[in-house]
Amino acid sequence: MSRPLVALRNVHKTYGHVVALNDVSLEVAEGEFLTLLGPSGSGKTTTLMLIAGFERPTRGEILIRGESMIARPPERRDIGMVFQSYALFPHMTVFENVAFPLRTRKCGASDIARRVDEALDAVRLPGVAGRYPRQLSGGQQQRVALARALVYRPSLLLMDEPLGALDRKLREEMQSELKSIQREIGVTTLYVTHDQQEALALSDRIAVMNSGDVVQIGPPLELYDRPAADFVASFLGDVNFLEATAMGWTNGLASVELSPGVCITVSTSTPLTPGKRVRLAIRPERLRLQAGGETESASWTVVIRAVIFHGEMVRYVVEAPGARRLKVAEPYHGADAILCVGQAARLAGSPRDWQVFE
Image 1 (cartoon, helix red, strand yellow):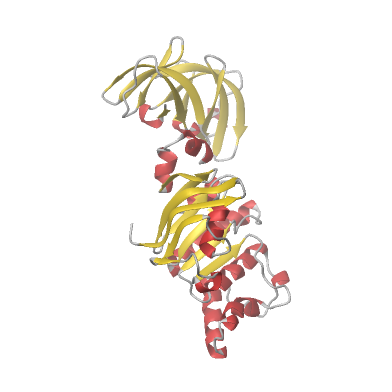
Image 2 (image 1 turned 90 degrees about the vertical axis):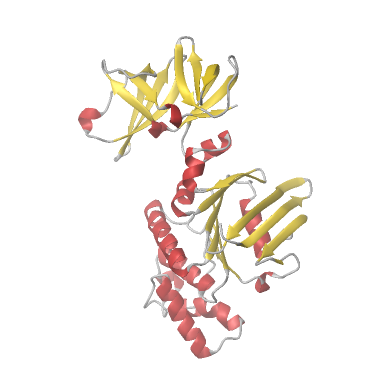
């Protein structure tokens, strides 16, 4: 990673006896799109507010370009901010809304006109400068808010659940647009969301937060495929958990018993002592179902208990030995390929697709 634009060093924030942030340290590189992902109360918005200067840390250091921001007011931090509510002035035109930050900075009229046009072009909104917010769609209003945050060319863009008010289809369209715009402009972006799919789609890296801590930080694929904790596995996408007993370990492969007589092989670099209890995790799309008499090594018999059709995907709930219920997701290959409720099948997963948590 290149040198950080933003660095948090052991930042701690309390509200009375409530710990909102617990000695958090993280860095955001120049040009990076970093997402803070976590449930409500995890500390992600508090982190954003501290960087913006709307809150002060109880202790710790916040640096931008190596300079301390602790005593610097928000307007002198060279930061643009976009909120979920858009916060557009309803009595002002689009032009006036976007121009507002430039007017407060005493920019000249010709400079304002040029930079507003450039900002609206950057967010794909040419020709709407004379309209009012009420005359725009939700997606267009969100782009106006983005243009306003970018018009004075800040070093850092902070975004707090900016797509939360949009419907699903528009939200997905705006995710694609937002990432494209961010790459074209190259602005360093710190983004807050509780939406896992949004974080996976947008981010160069994701910092998963819980109860004021950064649990894991890394690229989306790394966090999804190799979560460092079961919380990360469960929060970042769908996952099955199973309790098991280690039977033996050799050269990175462990034999574990799910229930009497049902053993599978999992990949783990950590030696497992026989008899040790472990927790296994596997994504639904990493499991495979086989109907009829087809068999596969390391598979076991299950019964289909539910079938949910999602268009491009078919999701199953299957009952494994010991009355365990697991979720399986498979691509839709036609109606004839869908298994039926009550049908017996064989279930298998590759050793490398299992995660082992001790």
